[in-house]
Image (cartoon, rainbow, N blue to C red; front, side, top):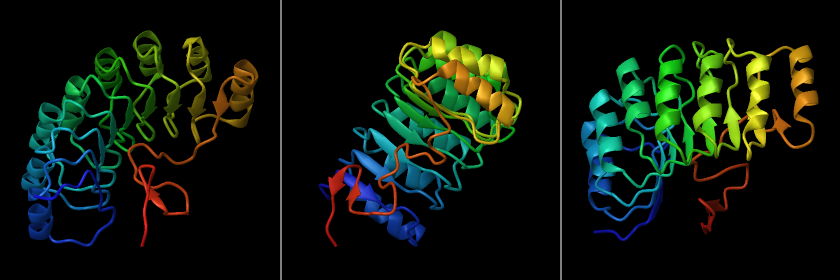
Length: 237
């Protein structure tokens, strides 16, 4: 068995057999990235054998079925940082994730679900994940102001919301996020027009930053152009 705690396989060209064999040797991972890799049930089964996992990056992965999502939330009870953006999840899978998300989750990127992330899903998530501080729901075109109401009522620790290209959200609802005591950052690229953005900026003042982060770094091992560390740990070539 390997004593690895951090493993970054982002965009790796690796066969399913080799990935299964590698993960089969890892049982003490704390942080893992499989971003942009094709997955299946067997691979996810090996992933969740690392029950101490607190950070998981599955952004742009394919092959995540409903059964895979069940494994993730049933086994990874200590998960705090999860990126599951642009994974082409089914409506059933999205609903399951939002209803059974680990209660200790602090940062979640579930963007790119297009027509499969609904107001009801956000309400379920907000009621369950009371420790949520950073949330990315960008590119969910069905979300309305009701989602903002749910977050304002239940996500009292929320500091950063990304809701870019959520076209049904209105400035009048987004303004109410300033009522959250710790809220400091709102990213809504492509959601509102310039006049509405200026109104928001005027309402927020200097306490809340508007459109500061076009890209999410939730659960990702590296950020920026200098790849000298993974999840804050220095690396050497």
